[in-house]
Length: 550
Image 1 (cartoon, rainbow, N blue to C red):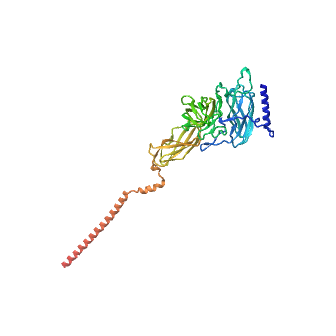
Image 2: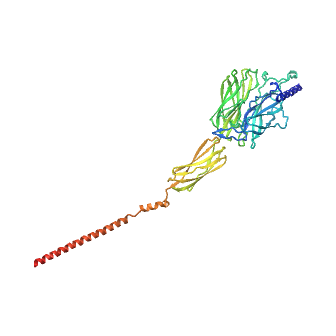
Image 3: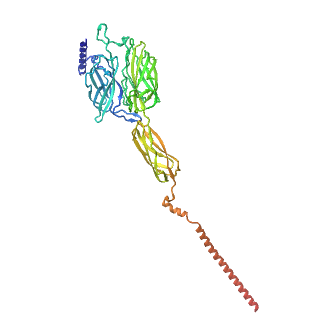
């Protein structure tokens, strides 16, 4: 029987090869390649950086998606298959020297037999807007379970100058080896777990995890996922039957349609409430006995980086929901805490779902939520030093101060200005300040008017975050400004001051002296005139006497 299966596998490979040669027709059903549906959440940020315009991330020049538009393949234990992964360049620049290789850190997580020392594929150059397929011929392990396996692929490329690395995740559904028939018989057909009421629910494979890149750089098109503007991202996988009774004609799909956080901006080191909107997309089948489990990836910058990025603020990470009627939506809520040492970027929360339909068929599904985390800017000032501490109107004083960036985010376009009645100073541009760095503020202040001692002036510092949002902080200082001294008055003001200071007393004395002299002269003249009149009268009297005597 095994030889028959191998012969059938070889015949299938020959048909596929014939279908790939131009001009050789092949039956569409025989030549159908088992494709892979890639999980579009990027679990490791590429080295390529993102720019931002008005707070929105811009599309990088090279964007590689894995498995875009492909469906999830279904493989059976011990089956020889061809794994095909389509790599698409959705950017505007060519990706050169593209290499893709599966990252097999744990053999139990790889559903295929490891038959080669190296599975790396060299895809060459992928032009902008074009796709290239990477193909591997593999054998499914005999001990695989009936579940979804998550496989991580590493991709490296360059733009002709700078090398880049990115990691992408794909999913593969497998069916376990059928149980042997009584008497040891084996008809070679795979047992349908849905027809075996004793089949136990299988543990679901890991859901998309790891760090989620900036929503502007992610790729969820055609993957059953949706990006929620301003709220991060959402990814939904197809449900997998894990046990129970006979399967319903319509498979009930439970997906995440969106989520919200309270507060809206999740700050590192703070608690937040996560509300997830869950919808039963089936129009005929209700689901019940629902269990949701939320797990965040390990992340951080310190020694405890192995701890999850988000943890429940209290209680468990599992949430139970009784049921969701067909076509309706329900909300589930959990209080969580974001680690204080998280970098400012989106992080994912993987959510697994277990539920049943009306026939007691058990299903498992998975979704991933990308939650942006913000780091609050923190900085400190040193003591402000002013030399000299007291100046006169028209003089200048030198102000110096150090600015320490004690936060975990970079400060952009830092500058300082000075505000106060009676002073004037030019703005001081410090520039960008990395986390843990020190900036120096060195400015000159000019006194324009008198300022009494104890009067407060302000140094206003403004800066921008990575999204271009402007923030402002203030620090007060004192500067005494004295009036200008007399010795410091301008030279052209001296004559005016001399004219204004002509002595008044000497002028008055001079006037009095001149008046006295004039009065004396007048009096002397009057006295002399009286004496002459008296003499003339005496002489006349004497003549009259002489005449009478004769």
